Image (cartoon, rainbow over all chains, first blue to last red; front, side):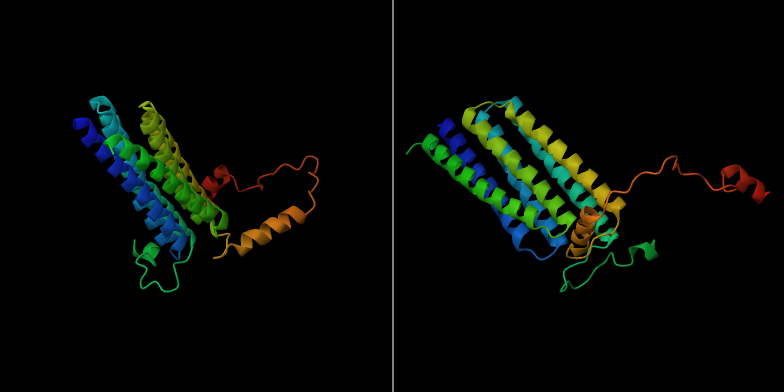
Amino acid sequence: MTDSILAILTALLVLSGAGFALVAAIGLNRLPDLYTRMHAASKAGTVGSGLLLLAVGVHAGDLSTFARALAGFFFFVLTAPISAHLLAMAAHKVGYPLYGESVRDEMKDYDKRI
Amino acid sequence: MTAQVILSYSIWLAFVVLCISFLLTVWRVIRGPTLPDRVVALDMLTGIVIGFIALIAIRTGFTLYIDIAISLGLVGFLATVAFARFILSRGGREGPQGETVKADMIRALAAPVPEPRRGARKKTAAGTGPAVRRKAKK
């Protein structure tokens, strides 16, 4: 009984993780500029790979494996925003433009304000 | 239909979905149009490959694959950080659609390779060293 519940839970986690990865890939292709693409890739993509790792931990049914999978999940969740933020800041500072219909750019005269 | 059969089918479906998203992301890497776009897509590719590794771990039952996935994530993070530093230090040599870089590449490929001159070492101009500057301040 427990085995079948764990298997169903694993199947749900696997399917939702793959779905998040697909949503991230579609967003990467459909969104108009670099910064919005970064938003799709770094959030949905991270959740996708993290859910798949959690599925491994749940499927093993072993506390040490689950702890390792959880550690990997937290590692990805912590590092993805850092890398996306660094990349966005570098691209904005160098001068890659926003999408033409963007409403506001709060970093526009950041150098003058500090 | 037992739970194991459902799990097996869902793993196959997840493989197919991950393959589709991998191909979509590769399309973004190819199309660009700028370097940061490609870097974002490469970061995303690392995430999808981690998902593949996790699926293989479930199918084969080797939980050691988790460690491989974690180390791949670390390498991907470091690569993205290094690329961000590179973009920052390279400066804006690229137009909004990447035409400038293409023109630069064509010019660089077409240009003849210059012969290095004998003894062409860069010399500091006289009177601009730190000692001279310190004297001038006094």
